[in-house]
Amino acid sequence: MASEAGAGGVGRAGPIEAGRGSVELAVILAGAAAVLLVPRLFGDPQGVDPFAWRLSAYFGAVWGASLAIPSLRRLTALTFSLLTLALPVSTWLWLLAYSGPAPGLIGPANSVARNVAAGVAQLVLALMMAAGFWMLAGRPRLRLLGRPGRAALVLTAGGTLAFLLVAFALPASLLGREGVPLLALSGSAGAGLGAANAASAVAQEVQFRAVFQVALEQRFSPALAVVVQGLVFGVGHLAIQYEGPAASFIPIVVGLGWLWGWMTIRAKSLLPAAVMHVVADFFILAAVVSGLYGGG
Image (cartoon, rainbow, N blue to C red; front, top):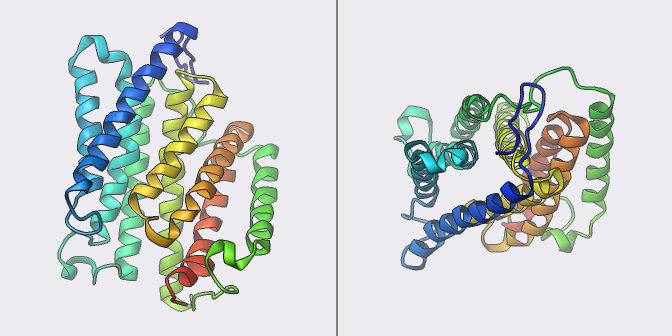
């Protein structure tokens, strides 16, 4: 690479390296798409097909190849950032009991206890892998730690308020619901689901905005890094959980990925995106998904 990441910032490649990096990233992601989608043409995407683990295995193999083959060593940090996107989500899905441990260990499948365990496990693993990426990538600033500045606090408060105003002002039909059929989230169940969704939301911010976006910033311009991570963020949601009636949310998810990526760079902190993501996940859980699937 033309420049290396130092302790205080994110190193960036020159034009030639950026061009080669674009091709390399496109090839890796095309391989991921094939690994994810081709077997699903011949299996049950909602049942026995372990698509998340297959994707984790693919990114793990690509990262292993970057370690073993000298000519691919420059891809070590990038491929590890991609593994950071997949492995915590695979663990989250496994603990939710799509194909996870016996119910007696945590509780019935998709129960509050399992949701909490899955969310916390995803966050812990994401943070551990962020530490690994930080060492592999030359100790760049991941915007995880440090006291938030004024810009971060303003973006956190203003962005969250704006999101809620827009979300509740949108026509109900656009969101696939009638009115706002809020779930009865109270007591221990409400606290548990709130904690589970908050942990998973923060984990995703660590994965996408603190790790993957920084890996992209080391190879491309900040603007292109934001665009790419937002697209991968949206496609990742489509592949894992937003099939069927909720697929219409994907353009919104991509847009939020772009917004949160820009906010993270502007604020030099993960705080605004993390708070907005937690609020957005709770809004979807309480006000949207229940209407989409007839619950609430």
